[in-house]
Length: 242
Image (cartoon, rainbow, N blue to C red; front, side, top):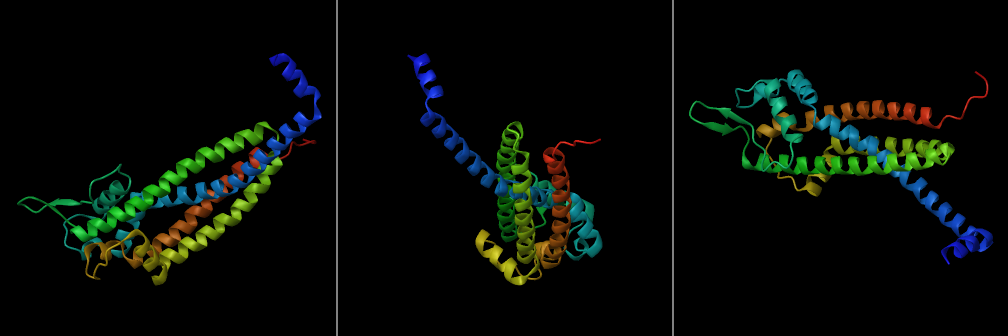
């Protein structure tokens, strides 16, 4: 019975057309999805590389001497390592930077500052999850289209993704480098209002975010350039003359 059904499907144009239609629809869906997942990979990878890197915090602290403006005996390098370590940690219970006061270990930051850092950490972790999911989907679609010989589709979709990446970088810069953008983010992730003399505000306030926005643009463009090169190698048409 199964063999007869198989022969019927092979001989019947209706079955073939239906199968071809399903494949075309599936390919069209994949081609649309890969546009957004590719852009998400580039944007979220850059975000995580930036805000989980001790070098970025260390550069700003050394340049601005921000650590010397707060009440702590920690050096700029030590503070950068503590913040980057927290951002890269897995499910921390709270944000703490402890130092020995001579009597006991005391947290450099207060409860409100700890709440804000936990909120920022959750947002970065969401970005990390989006990166992992988007990477898996993107690689899967690339492998599927590559094996199916649809290099032109991958090349065309990547060009559209480049436009989304540029738009995303512009949006990120506006959110990080403007008062209105920072206020919008604060409201959305539930940041508590801190005074200008807050230890955390001195360290990671508007000046730090302005610098981070510039770094993020540069890092994103570098990642985009690398991905563009890889995409070109994978999707370039075969050469006739050598």
